[in-house]
Image 1 (cartoon, helix red, strand yellow):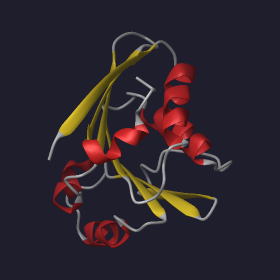
Image 2 (cartoon, helix red, strand yellow):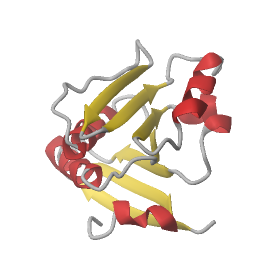
Image 3 (cartoon, helix red, strand yellow):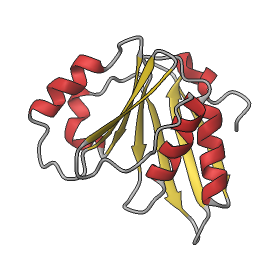
Image 4 (tube, one colour):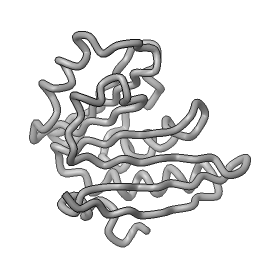
Length: 154
């Protein structure tokens, strides 16, 4: 499988959201995105932009304490998982396997190491690294078949 990589630097939380919003507008369903960052790295900010671009007006919050949030728009659902508090996947991995790849569901995963066996190889991995107080460096790795998500954004 060939992976493409895109590098993006944003200078503010608003710009990070705008990049995510552009990507969110291209979501078709069935995609799996893994967000990689330390605490405070901008994952929730990124998801806020994705959800807006996806077409949902739902309030976006971090699912750290309840493990997942679901946002809906135009017949699609976006599942946002945060596995930070899990030591092992348990039955959550089973739930993840059930929804991954469904044509009407987009799956976003934070702290995916605990469920790495359940994640498909053909996923988008977005690494967010702070490089200043408001600046973020985003590295997007994705298989060629998902390159439509970042075309003309980077």
